[in-house]
Length: 479
Ligand code: NAP
Image (cartoon, rainbow, N blue to C red; front, side, top):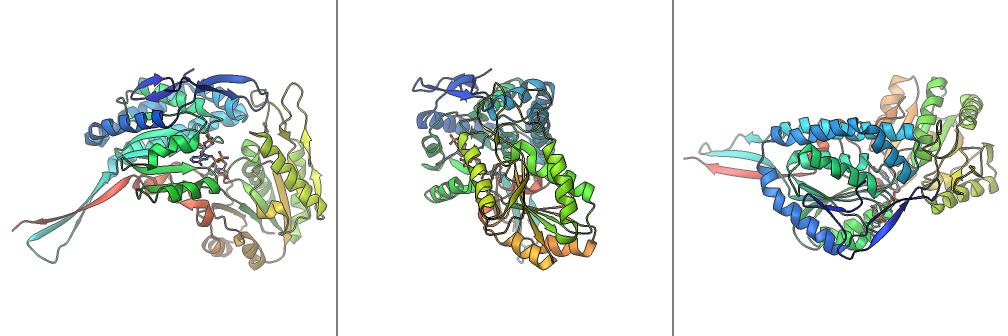
């Protein structure tokens, strides 16, 4: 297992010589001691990426595709090892971690192909003696700041488009989950990437490490996935050198079930959307809006499915709900539940933390809260835990108004059989992603991202590679 920073093709200790412990949130067991890099390490990584840029940029896209594809193959080959590492550092169940590794590899596979389709344009000129061309060129060194909740996929979702476009990259993974990023770096050597094309700087002091991304003109793109609070800080810091930023931030997804919906599919969708990674995903349903006629039946079926979920160590057989990543996450989920109960809601299942024998005290019971109203905390803030609050609505207009009554705008879900309503809602919901009878819309070939406080820019699809390309307009007098 690699535990040092990956700079210019080599694994190197932090210049300070310091390390920090990565622990398994399920058990508090130390998984590894990892290099505690700082600004000097990050500068070295940025310099290495800048040196590698001209060579990588000038390679044909078809050649850049080869190590990208190879890395995807290696990730599939090593899926069990990568999934186990992912589960150890972020706590998610092994079955989910395996799916994450495949999802992560899909970004490398897809962008290996998409990099070959970065076409320019010719524009008809008004002056017959001129030729007008638009070139699309890699913008330079790119930086990626990734969260702990998808430690494998959030790296490759940024790496695939950046490297396919011809940019070189420095990745700063979350301090809780640096090992997955280092494992990808290790496989990148075997895949044949030239030194300096991919670099990873691990460490505890995120503001110091990321200083190297903003304090001069070398880094031209910073892609961040994480909280809205930190996204705002990075957006402000990007102003000094006018660095382009892509921000994938928090969500507060409504999950709307109309009374003509297929309830089996709606319940299955609710389970998939809400409880993946113990509710610690940015697109997970955070507010359930259920139309009055089907409310009781939906809650009964949903409650039965939720009550059957198995809570435990992510690496234990059959686990479906792992630990919260940190004590603070558990406290937030408990606070949201307590606030809802104090204001008149009731738990149809769960409602408190659970003790898992031999594990840390960091597990929240999967919870369904009924009788929730929009003024309760759980309906106003992202819970980021396995808590499903249910509100009963009467009309489409009411559901839409409540769904849009938030500063967030990442993902929204609706379950209905009415085609006209689907189109009305898809157009009126103020969200970057709308899942229609589909609780898992994220895929490599489609644009993922939010509006309002949920972010700027898109990852995935041909839209995702645009973030890493500069337009160069060439006006050519030929006569
Ligand atoms: P976070 O605290 O914002 O951390 C994300 C990353 O930013 C980590 O690498 C972190 O490093 C770094 N960071 C923290 N403070 C920083 C600073 N002042 N300057 C520079 N970098 C800094 O978010 P999180 O708690 O890991 O993730 C949870 C949030 O992310 C939720 O709101 C969730 O909705 C959102 N999220 C969004 C998406 C999406 O695609 N829209 C996907 C996943 C998660 P350290 O770990 O070293 O602090």
